[in-house]
Structures are given as structure tokens and as C-alpha cells.
Length: 615
Image (cartoon, rainbow, N blue to C red):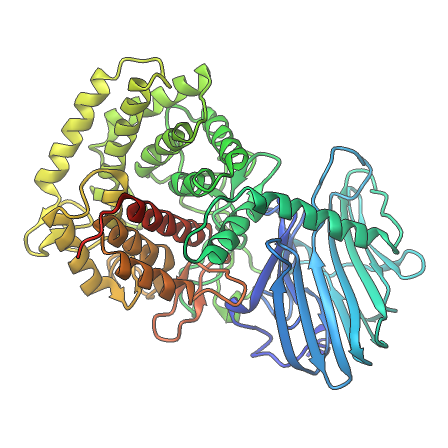
């Protein structure tokens, strides 16, 4: 057992459930902090850079930053108001500690010499005489390097060489107890406060402010920013707290320097314990774009929606008029997948990947996502520039030309391409949205050609997608498997939710893929992979979205309630759930899941307002 583990509360082989994590961040990168106070995941300087702490993916070699009690008897935590500031109350034999964790946001353009990133951990003894324990073991490069630590003055330690460096300022006396590991313990008295600040800079050394009132000012400024963001959220329906937390989480995963929104903040958290289904999701998938942009603008976050759309249209210009599967936060597409040998994977469920092999795939649904996102933006008062409108025209032309091709589809299945029906529907949606934008004058073009091709796609789908053996629309032409994404057809305007074919498709999908309120995206074995996966959280919300549009409001709300109940105590959701245990699986937090929650609640609100309940 190494020195870092020795100071931690008891864990299962050094790991905690995925749902035990909270996320803090500064909209450039994010950290995951376990309930026990261990910061187990942080990449610097940006979301998709190498990790400095990665105990999430290897409890022994990954590195962590622990602040808390070694013998807690009770731990309570919550976000402060509607912010991304985490507050944890730790009760132990000696008393009670309160720990406030956050990353200050770059709130203004001044301070060019300030550190690029900072993690602040503020501790106060609020009762009795609790013992505070600290352990810091940075392991840069996904655990591949054990750094040299050097004293940098009273209470400060430096790590770094060349262009990159980190500085740890600690109000708790620390000593190097093992190579690359600092530890310390201190018994506090009621009212005592301690501050720990981890700063990162690249290029020229940043000037780190002295300890004292600075962190408290940073805390209040960060809280004020999040308060201002949350005030613009316009929603007064059921599960308001869950919706706000989901919007805040999407904003937390927005890379503010470009406007891109990540699919998730992590890599390689397994969709099945034991490995095999481990992917790097620290990129922006176009399939997510219409869901995420709608989640922002439909609740009043127009600045975020505008920034995301501008990024989408800017990033994709390098591949225009073709769309790639995903892009980095800076719009790059030269991404390959590599296995990280230095990490064993969460609970031994390797491999751990950096990058994603899905980049060369063809996902035709992307065209409907990006043009649909543009229409949603215009629906809520946004405008398109002439170059942006022209770029949308190029994407519409590509959808009109390529819709009949087989592709890997939304779910990126390995093996030969097939004619995925969701991809066809999304090509129809791309042309439907583009024609609508043309007719409304948002795009200055004649839609006649695209209208004809849109109608041809619809006829083709309705003629070929129905599978009489299933008694439902199948996932692909000529195949006998169901795809939960087809429950989105009413949302896309392709078919009314009460169309008998949609009703039958929902019933078959619920019967074969449903697990209570949860739902699998397709049956085990369909993708040809040996391991099985959990239920896909977004699909459960898509089923609720369908029920709302069908007019079954009570069933929709009950389903949403059950799914909201699967989130962790902070309202965060991973990609999937183990249907038997309820354990969260996959990368965390997952943008698709949170956008699904928001979309389902908005569909229910709007359907109720329209008064189309079915009795």
C-alpha cells in the first residue's frame, strides 16, 4: 500500500462507485472529487490534455489529491446554491470539517501572468477539534511519471520543468513521505481555517496570489458568476432543481474558449465492469449538438446556444461540406486512438484510451443534428450570417446526396455499415430544417430541390423501415433489431406520436429494451461485441419525451421521476446504469444524459401547455 492510499478512508481496492463523484471546473477543464474528499481526476490545462491526477482509472498509479478525514463517521455534500462549487461536511470523532472545493473561473481579461488553472480547497473546523488529513501525489502523463517535488517557500511546493509547472500552496504543513507524495495531518480547533491551492501555468510562470483573503474573494466571485448564469434559466415546471443542475452541468462541460460542449469529462469509464466498452468522450460529438443547443436556448441561455452554434459552424468549415463524427474543443479532426499502458482502468476494467477510433466513421445523422441546431437557434430569435447560411446549404446538399448510403449510425457499431433508419430520418430532418430556414428567410436560397429530396427520403423510409416480424420500425433496413433512438421520430416531426406505427414501435421497444423506466439502446449482441452494457440513460428520457408528445402526461412524468431518482445525490448522471444494481456506468458526467433530461421536461411542459392529454 503506498503512502497516498494509507491516508485514505477504506475503499474497495482503492475505488469508489462512479456515482460517488462530484465535478468542479472552470469551463476549461474539470476535476472529479469523491465523496471521501479525494480528487481522483484532473487533466491540465484543458479537458482533453493529459491527466495530473487519475486515480479514477488506477487507484495505485494514477495519483490523487486528498483532503478530509481518515476516519469519517458521516459525510454530507451539496453544491452551493445553483453553482459548481462543492461543499462537503465531514463528521468524525473529533468534530466536523467543512470543505469547499472549486476552480476559479477566468472572470475577466486581466492578469496575463495569472496561473492558467487553479483548484482551491478551503477547509474550516465548524465543530469540536477534528483532525484534517492531506495527501497529494501528482502523477502527470496519465500516471506515467512520478514527479520531483521541491519546496518553494513556506507552505509551498513546486512541481514542473520547462514550459509547464504546478505550485501547491498549503496551509497544512506537508512533508514528502514517499517519492512524489506529500502528506500531512493537523488537529484543528473550531473556527480554524486552512487553504490549499494547486496552480498550473504554461509558458511563463504565473504569479500566484498569497494566501489569506484571496481565496475567499475567488470563492465569492465564482459563486456570483454561477448565480448570474442560473438566473437566466427560464423554467418553472416539475423537477426544476434537476433541470437547473443539468443545465449547469452542460455549462460546466462547455469549453468557454471556443464554445464547444464535451460529450463527457472523462475517458474510459467502462460501460460494463470488466472492460471492452471503454471510450474517450472528451470531445464534441455532432450527434449531441441539437440536443445540447436546444437544452440551452429553450431555457433562456441564448449566449451559450449562440457560442455553441458559432463553434459548430466554425469548427466544421475545415471539413465542409462533409461532417466528421466529432471534433476537439479547438475544432481539430486529426485524432487517433491510443491505449494508455500506464493505467489499469476503473476497477481493473481496461483498456484506458486517449483519443477515439470513431473519427473515420460515417454518421449521417450529424447533418440533421447541425442543421436542426441552427433551426432551433433561429426559432429562439437567433440570426445566421451569410457565410453560416451558405455552410448550412453545403451540409444540406451533402445530406441530399448521401442519405441513401449505409453508415455506422448514431451508435457507432463495429462491423459492416448498414442502412440505419435513424440516420435516414436525420437526413430527412436535415432537409426539413433547411427548407424551413429557406422559407422563413433565415437562409437566402431556393429550397425546391431539397424539398423534393426530403419527400423522397420520407417515402423511402415509410416503404422500407417497417418490419412486420417485429411489428415495429426496425433499427436498420432488413434487420430484426429494435433501436430506441427511433422513439425520437415524433420529436423530429417525422411522425405523430399517436400514429399507429409509432405506438406499436414504442410498445415493442418498451417490451424488449425497457427495464422499468430505464431503456437499452438496442439488445445485447446486436453490435457484435462480447460484453454486455447497461441501460442507456438518454434513451429512458427519450421514451418519456415520446410519452409526453403522445399525450400520456402522467406516464411521462412518472418515468422522468424514476430516472431523476437514478442520478447521484448531486443530480449528476453517467452514460448508463446497471439495470440490476442501479450503479452508474460509463463516462461521467454525460452530456447526452443531462440533455435528455432537459429535453423530456421541456416536451412535457410544452405538451401540457398545448392541452393534448390522452385520457
